[in-house]
Amino acid sequence: MKVLLVNRDYALKSPRSIRMFNWLKKEGCDVRILTFGDIPSEDPNICVVSCRKSLFINQLKRLIFKFLGMHGYVLCRSEDKDFIKHLKQEKPEIIICQTLDLLPYVMEYQADAKIVFDAREYYPEQGSDRWIWRILFKKLNIYICRKYLPKCDAIITVSQSIASLYKENFGADCFVCPSMAEFYGLLPSAVDASRIKMIHHGSCARSRKLENMIDLIGCLSERFSLTFMLLNDDPEYLSELRDYAHKKGVGQRVHFISSVSYKEIVPTLNRYDIGIYMLSPENQNQLYALPNKFFEYIQARLMLVVTPNPDMAEYVSKYGLGIVGEDFSPRRLAINLESLSSNDILFFKNKSQESAKILSAENDVFRPFFDYISKKTK
Image (cartoon, rainbow, N blue to C red):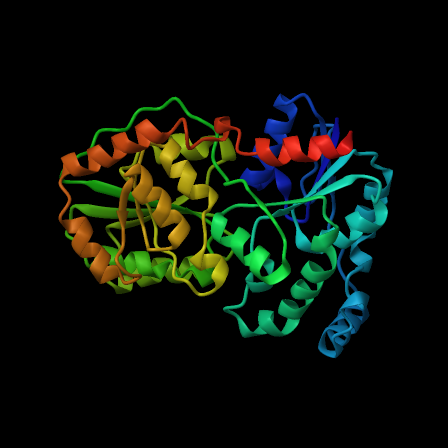
């Protein structure tokens, strides 16, 4: 079966794209990736299209059309013509589209294929914590969802809460396929009672309010430290975080290390004790987050500490993986953390060990939607 996976983000750095690509290959599919990016791939089955710069006049036209609510005129961008050219040349039976604004291209130029939309976010609220995003993109994303989601042969998403939002607001039924990491045959690392090592990794995104985790360290005793392993996707914010740690007087206990390759993430995390994600609910996507890192923490055999975002909290509570904060404040969470002994932490790390197999990509998380769409191609 020929499958094409398309993504506006650089798919070779997207854990979910990589996992889906590998899973489809394991299933015997002839799978290709068509993605935007600046680094070409040596794999003949991965086509990386360079991003063209948009002319000012085209940007101005798009802006005017957005303000006028003429969203149909905004869907096709001149800078995407190389992507469209390659898309036309493909002959897939199934297309998995992982970016909302690529759906119109897929529908127009690959109408004979079965089309699956991977709704990795709840796109109508993706950046709604920023006023400029609400002005420029909110109505456009709602327009695309209303027009194109009903035309998809299947829709998948990362969490039950996001699936419920798509059902409630667009009548769209979604297969829930969490972004579970591949299984790693690791063991929990030993816990030093005098040096409890927490880690957070991922995007350096200002909207995530990563400084809350620095505030948490300020509320904890000297035995706790925090390491950030962040992408350098916002150098200014990264610098602000470093300065903030020193300003709060915890610069010696808040460390910053370089991000590592996809394959090195879990082995690197395994050196720590606690995987932490304090995520302030600035928008619905953040409230209902169930990210890649959550499952990577489990594969690294870490104790998990999360804020009460319902989908993360459900997994932590169900499998006994760690602590769920009573609210989103650092001070309240610090009280819970401070009460932990090294044996408590090791207990939760062993719970991750017990759950690692079932909460991994080897548990065939993509199977339900794939079997469904495969039957529709026959």
